[in-house]
Length: 244
Image (tube, rainbow, N blue to C red; front, side):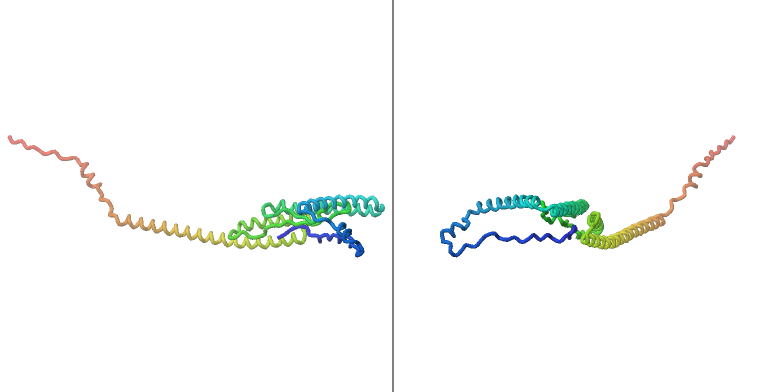
């Protein structure tokens, strides 16, 4: 899923070749001399790099020459176009960096599309940031936390685009589903805990009943108090009869 500031891509002007065909009345030797010599791959690559640099330098030089040769009205229009491109570049970069900063581990790096201005400089005119909106398997609580981050990332810019709003709506829907799954999971956990608690109570009550039955089966201890009192009575001394 991509979030970002979408703008139609810039279509460059078609390029035209400046090569001219060889005339039919030119001798073969001259024709061969006009043809470009065949170079080695390394030389071709070096020539290609040099050609790229030359084209960039030529573009800057041409822009400067055009600016110098343009009329005051054209120069004013170019300045206005450059100012618009500078502002657009700043807005696009701020927009995409807000997505990336808030999205954190779930967001990718911003990518941009550029347009070359009258001054030869490249300006960002659109951009996007990839973001992971997949639910976390078998973990609604983690999914809920993730969708909250995705939602904040989608709405992070000051002016969210239509694509940003679609991503935000998708994150809200997945967050709602995760809340339902989380509520069901917690209900099941509460029911399981209640059953375990009831089982422990039943086991304790059965143990208490077993203990009471065991106590009733044991005969009471004999009452030794009577024997103790008899032992405490004074013993009578034997009498002696004297016969005279």
